[in-house]
Image 1 (cartoon, rainbow, N blue to C red):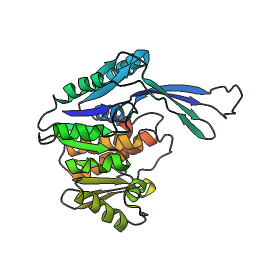
Image 2: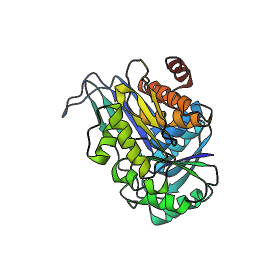
Image 3: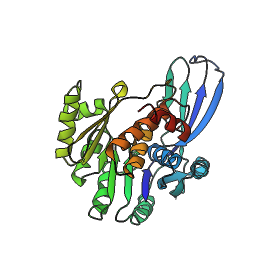
Length: 299
């Protein structure tokens, strides 16, 4: 079983307008709502690919109820901890001549609620996959990912970490199966500028030395590069299409890669991940199977 953790899920309220003027009443052209958070995004795209997962995390209030219903409507098995106070956040995405985002803070997560989550994590066993993705709410300890990995290490669980900065680097000692930095994040880790494939490979190898088994680097218009656990290099170009959306594209790529790994072929996994990331980038919401299949033909 694949498990995803989303500490701070959200309703993404997307408002489209011809223009936005501060200090004035603005009229929307269209409005959409999506239920997400990085882990939920991964679970949603896995569901499109007919790969089962279980979404864990925290919800609160009427917005939390809406998120749970929305997640289940997407075909995702959800097992959230229900917080007694507050509301799950609403993130406002203003799309006009420029894109502006206002992300909510989210509810307070108590030690008792965190203990509830740990009890659910204890059910993860040998051969399962655990995906830890995204930032950490202020009410949780900054080393919460490390605490989770320390608690579950040695059980034959496949860990996948999608985070940035020290949050990711501090997890490497637990030998995650996969990490997914982009080329800018990779450079930031080492205070270097990533320009060529050789640069990417050089620093991906450094992350392997620090504990990562597989390093998947997304490189925007240059495609993606995978350094696998046998130190083999896999490359994949980008799909062609009209860019509509950047939210969730990286999560979609991760989901496609994980689904592809189930076939045991790194090359296929990289292609499927690229197609899923492109399908989200070329859509108003997350990737749908029909577009994923269409983009796979480009690769």
